[in-house]
Length: 127
Image (cartoon, rainbow, N blue to C red):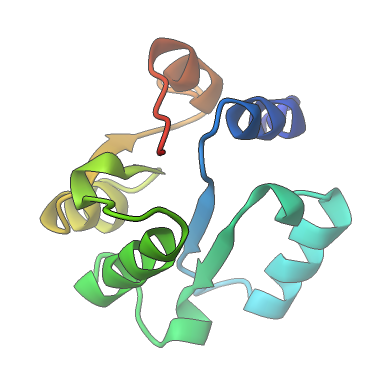
């Protein structure tokens, strides 16, 4: 859907943004997604990847967002939930789940709120 994802990921990392991937994998198995991420070279841009069929939980379950917090806290000391910005395409699973966890959250889609537009409007850097 995005022709410039690799460039976006590279730019985000260069700005000091830590990227993590959190995905419900109801229709595509994690081994397929991991092969895809690896094949596209995107896995190198993400500090961690969490998939529902590996964790046993699906968004909006608080356990999924707790795992994000655990992973991110291992990378950044004194990290607060409000410092995490969760982008997702589902208002219930992504936005409501993230907000309940104390994260910032934004609903994104390719037409009305594309990732590249959001990033141009807002820079989130975790230090």
